Image 1: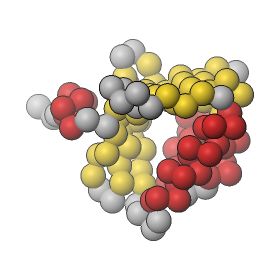
Image 2: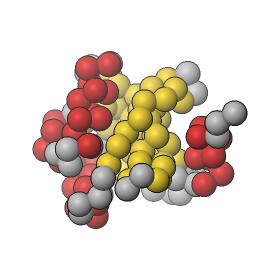
Image 3: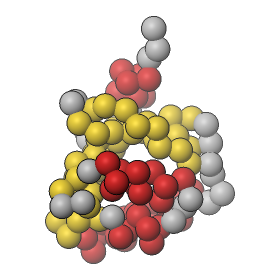
Length: 114
């Protein structure tokens, strides 16, 4: 799982959509709770992530590893601001589930520092 997650971070930070797409499992699901956004399957996720990457333009992107509910996750930063918490599940060396939590109150639960 760690090699796939490391490649995910590299792909995001380099704005390398092709590298990101190469990491997607054939049965990938992407969600954005509590939004009803649910993207299922490789083809629809490829389209979704191509649009997402295109919106970033020249923004600085960082993915900072954190634990999320006992699993792998990231703080997703764009231009120095945490924009989402991502919970990531890997299966067979590929990203199988990606859950993006973008609500400020959820982000605050993970980013609050004592």
